[in-house]
Structures are given as C-alpha cells and as structure tokens.
Amino acid sequence: MAGMESYVEAPPLPELARVVRTVWIQRTGETAYVQRHLPTGGVEIHFPIGGRPQLVGPLTGPAVEVIPARTTIVGVRFHPGTAPPLPTVLDDLVDQRIGLVELWGSLEDRLVDTMAKAATPERALVFLQSHLVQEFRRTSTVDSLVGAAVHALMPWQPLNIDALANHLALSQSQLRRRCLQAVGVTPKVLQRTLRFQGFLALAQAGAPASGRRGADGVAGLAIDAGYADQAHLSRECLRLTGVTPSQLLGGDLDRCSCGHDHSASYLPFLASRSTPARFVQDQAPGRLLISTG
Image (cartoon, rainbow, N blue to C red; front, side, top):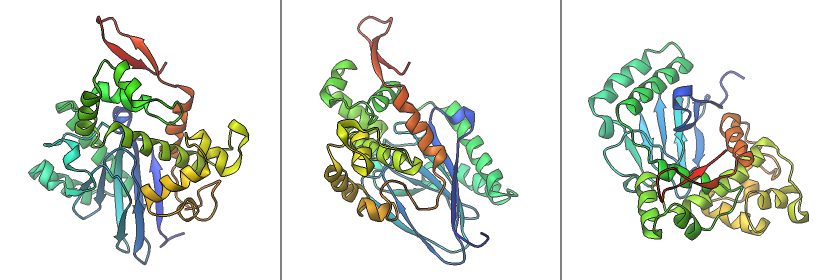
C-alpha cells in the first residue's frame, strides 16, 4: 500500500553475481522505521536517494538504525570476502559505518549526483551496480582461496576449522589472517554467522524441516542449519541479533512474518545445499582447491 514501509530484494546484475549476494530497495512510509541490521558475513552499501552513501562493515552483532520517514534507500549486500575496492583491510571496518566519501573520494560526489537524478529507485540501483562493475574490473580485490573457504563454511556441511586449514594447505594462523583481512572476522565467527543465515533462509522460505534426528518444526530447522538443538539456536540468535527467534521472526518460528521480500537472498543461499563443497587436487603440485561441482 502507498505510504507504507517496504523492502524488496532482487538478484544483482549478472556481472556482479560472483561478488554480490543481493541488491535491495527500502522505502519508509509516513513515520520513521526501526531497522535491525543483522550479521551476514559480508559488507553492505546503503545509499539513500538524495543523501550520502555509507559502507556498513562486517557485523558481529545487531545494529539498530532509525530510518527517517519518506526515505528511499538502495542497497548492495556482498558475499563474505568480496567487498568493493577499499583502501583498508576489512578487520579495520568491523561493526562500523563509513561514509563512502572517505573511501572513494570525489568519485562518490559524482555518483551521488547521478543517483539523485535517476527517474526511479530501480534505475538508481542500476547506476550503482554499473559503477561497482567498473570498480571490480579496475581493481580485483577477491581472494579466491578465502572464497573457497567461505563456501566450505556454509552450514549444510559442518566442517572443522582445523580440517579446513589443512585442506587448503594453510596453517591455522594463515587462514585466520587471510579471513580477517578479506572478510573481517575469523573463520569460526564466519561459520557461526553463516549457520544463522542458513536458519533464517529456511525460515524465510517457509521450508519444512527434513526430519533429521526425528525433529520437526523449529527444532528441525535448527538441526538442518547445523545447530545441536533448538536451545543452541536460541542462544546464538540472542548473541547475533539481540532478540529471541520468536521476536526476530514476528512470533512465528517456522516462517518469517516480517513482511519483507527476501527471496533473492535466501534462494541462492538454499541452493548451496545441493552443491556441497568437496576438496579436489588442482593441477598445480601441492595446491588444493574446493569445488562446488
């Protein structure tokens, strides 16, 4: 309905699919809206139309923001380890919001003008994505080994961090350092974040529990996402979101009732359940890669 708050996600441009999880447009109505941002493992760009854009660094807990009334924001949510070109490593930006002018300089001013002149928010979002395509073509910042580690840490196939480092032919300290630089958090923190994102994806999709270990309902979804039981999920939900699962999902634990369209985000996430990571030997002697095929 006109005048009401709305949030709709969409897939990114094909050229960004390997680095961007989803793009989105949020509109507030006649009153301010309280938004609870949750850890996703990646960074985000929040670009209010007519305002100054910000980069939201990797979150380790909830970040509550009051968005003014009659505001339109376009956003880009990146996969873990695939931040846009930045002059610093990501562990310097954890739990921070940074004005893009501090990162992109005068280029940000030109982008603000272009976005403000866009006829629609959808068109503005295309402009923002086109700019990111050019940035990634100009400067490649993706650590492919960290990307392989991220896929291996998805919740559908629990993996010991020590085993992951061994399979990647890295020491534990090397894997930790590279994740801190490229993702902003340690492999263990990332694994916990992705596990909770897995539970949210199942709940947002209204997916039925698989019945593993005889559990159904929310307990079954928790086990499917990699938790030991429902109590384990509840503890992690409080840690990562500041509220209980019931409060987060609007009272219905089996399905999110926030009213937002998250399908462009959760469908690719759930698709990874059918392509579990497996370790393979590369042609280069001694080099190990992770395949999703």
